[in-house]
Image (tube, rainbow, N blue to C red):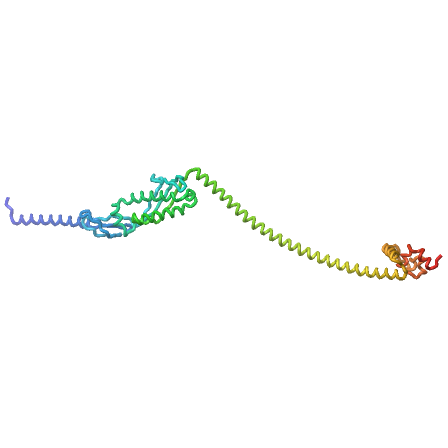
Length: 337
């Protein structure tokens, strides 16, 4: 077989074309493997499988040049959550400050510290999730021993805040992350303790209801006391008015009596003087005068009602009344038979 120059040129062209094609494929493959993307919720560290290098530079979402053999070790930029629950068979068993066993269902949320991603990867080589879980288990169990069973029952939010603070402080110093929140989803204490707590809560509610009843009764009694005081003031005012009226009436009656008595005394004094009576005779006169047994006749003549022995004496009816008892002595004075 004899090769001609034309045949040589054709073979060379084929070799060159093949080499170019192979080079193109290789360059395309190298170019494709030299680019890597990160999602907007991701951040990463660039590493190279050929040179076994790890860049401390933090990369965020987008398309980046990583070179041949390069790729990203990715971390979530958003908040992550870890949960201790019965569903995952990793519920926490701990003890309280007073020694009671407690079963806790807890979830906590954490976020990586971007500036510490390089240190995080060098420290745990990507196995930090397991370290986080085990560390949180230990810290939560230890923190549980600082709180009583009643704290878990009555103040779970305060206990959760202290647990979150403990985890955040340790994670930031040793695990290059921040614990941003923690929730106590369930807490299971011994049944006798739960029964005692329910009884105490019932008693507490009864005490609260009693205090409220006492407050209502105090208001009611205060209201009734105010009403009673007003009624008492009204009664006192009415009594004072009645007393003043009675006193005024008494003063008026006393004045009338005093005036009448003065008039009677004057009359009796005149009778005593004109008839020359002693005190005993005057008293008899007063007695008969008070009986008013004698009156003026229908003719209007006062002398008709005066006894015969008195008509000649010049005495009136009032003076003659006493002569009923004094008749013998009076007639003797006047010379009557």
